[in-house]
Structure formats: C-alpha cells, structure tokens
Length: 316
Figure 1 (cartoon, one colour):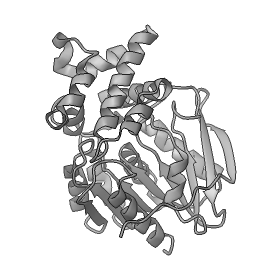
Figure 2 (spheres, helix red, strand yellow; figure 1 turned 180 degrees about the horizontal axis):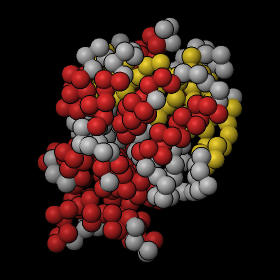
Figure 3 (tube, rainbow, N blue to C red; figure 1 turned 180 degrees about the vertical axis):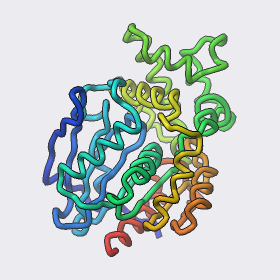
C-alpha cells in the first residue's frame, strides 16, 4: 500500500548561521523539539530545501533540522563557488549540530545528499545515530560521465538534444568542461542559457514518468543558475574527493550504525549500480530497490519506503 506524506507543518525555529567570513547558512527546525534529531541533506549540490521535505517525518516523534547548503536557497551569498567544497559542507553540518546543541543525530540524504551524508558520517561517525539514504550517488567518474556525457542520453534522446543546444559541436567531446566555461562566463545571458539547459535536462530525467511541472520549476532563472553552477563546480572537481572510491571504501567506519538504502530501479540520474555496490560494502544496511520508480523523492514507491524508514528509526 502506498503511503501519503505527513501533513504540512511550519518550522518552530528558523535562523542564520555564519560558517565562514563569506558564507551564512539558512536553517530551520520543525516537528517536536524533544523528538529524535535528524538532519536533512538536500540534493544538487544547489538544490536547496523546500517545505515538502518536512513531511517525510512524523512531527510528533522527530526533531527535523533542514538547511540550505552553501550558495543556494536562502543561504548567502547566492550561487557562490568560492569556499564551496564537499569538506566545507561537512564542516558546516558539524557546526550546525553543535550550534543547535544536538549530541548525535540521524542523517537523511538523497542523490547528492547521499554522497554528502556518507562524507559527513565517515568524517564524524560519533555524531551520527544512523542513515537513511536515497538515490545513491558516490561521485565516481563513470556516474558523472553517464549522466552528463554518454549513457542517459541513449534513454532520453529528445531531452538530450536540448541539453546539447548551448554547446557547439566542436566542444561536445567534453560537455562538463564546455558547460563549466559557460556557467562561469562573465556574460549573464551566456550563464543563464547554459544553466537552464543543464537544469532542465536533470528535471526531464528525474522521474519514471516525466513531469512538466518539474521541468518548469527547474527552468526558472534563479533556481537553474544556482543548481547548474554548483553541480558543475562540484562534478568537474570530482566532488573534491581524494580517491575515486573514497565514499565506498569509507563505509567501514559506519557499518556499526543502522542504515536504510532506497533506490529506484529505473533511476537514470543515479544508476542503481552505485546503490547495489554500496549495499555490498554495507550488507548490514537495509536495502530497497523500488521496482516502479526513477530518481525523485516524490515517486510513490520511494516515498512509501522512506516514510517506513523514518517511522521505524523514530522508535530506535
């Protein structure tokens, strides 16, 4: 039986936390101040939080902390690439935990948020109670190439054609580099054209049944620019990891903690191979391969599995 989300709720606490001389993060807390603490790590990088995310947790039992990562949402400065690496974000999560006076918390992350959750947990395992991970992304070269150079293009040739439009044929041998140049061009029109094509490609492929509403939202100027600039910045630098398999190899530090992995069988953005390999490295983790889902957190089977996980973890 498919589950529906919990009813909409408003934060009981909102604030801004300076994390460097340049960056200030927006955060909010909702649910029960005395409940089980959990931090929600959004996707992208650059996706930002939205009210929908609060509804994956029983508000009577969870103290839910959500925040906009550097450069996106209500955090400032907007679309800023300086001082913006995986390890800056890992440090930010720990600063937020300490700022809120939380001893240990659960970590919930999907897509890019799953990579960030693993990086954070492996750096600060003693700050974590457990993990709920969705749409697994491990920042490996083949994952990035699959989605931005060759692979997903074979399944979505119509959407791929639009993704190629800002890039002349002679530069298409390295689309990531070509996009990086345009997303950092001094001409705002060049940046925006590239950003919209990049973001709409992601929106067009994120669901098993494509959603025109999602495409429209991702194509909006402010969202597209921060999403595209931050994603391309992170991916061209391979997530600032030291080795290709760093997040997979570091799982040994987390295997004593409870975990749930939820993956759509037909996820084109983050292919299921990575979720499967994470499960092989972390056999204690509960693994759910949803047979009728793509990448999106809102797809019915993924939504239902995530709600079951948060309900169960609330009782631990």
